Length: 168
Image 1 (spheres, rainbow, N blue to C red):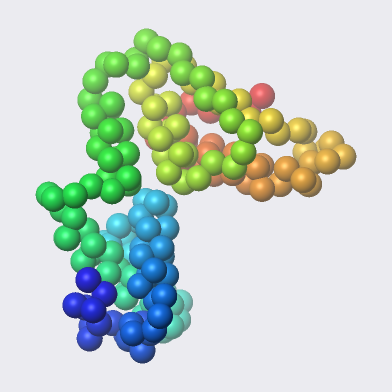
Image 2: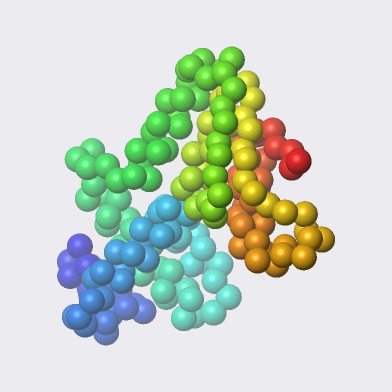
């Protein structure tokens, strides 16, 4: 896909033939997809970019993301599509409506995991998420700052999914 669209690239045009570039681009597209950003959203972001360099980079990533989406559409599925379809199906059933769900973890959650937790939380009767986060005034709270930020992102994802959330 990269070689096929090489002439359309602006920011990445001179890097197409460099060793390891394909791997880096695939990782970049994958990270955006895991964050829930598809080609349309990337294109929209490029149109609102504050500078020309960011605009060109986002346009290239949107172009490659669109090519990837078109290539797998109806033929293949990646993890992001599988999760979206599973959560969409879950919302259309009463499978978890009367159930209580427990999520237990001890580490930072990713955007994909947050979307799954929030999607399930919006469909079940009750969800409890247990993460070991000490009070912000404890002596070692700074060690847990990355986890605290991850919890904040999870809470925002829960709000957007209209799933109840309360920190205890």
